[in-house]
Length: 58
Image (cartoon, rainbow, N blue to C red):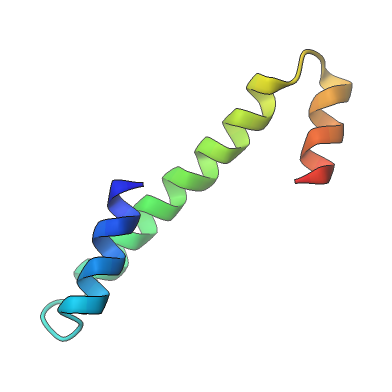
C-alpha cells in the first residue's frame, strides 16, 4: 500500500521528474495488492467450495 501511495504522490507532485520511476513503483504496489487480495480470499474460506464462491463474488 505504501508503494501505491508513493507512486501516486510522485505522479501528482513530480510528474516530469522521473515518470518511469513512478510507474515502476505503482506497478510493484499494485502487483503486491492483487496478490494480497487473492491471498485474503483463500485464507478466509474454510474449504475449496467456499474459495470458489468467494472468488466468484469478488
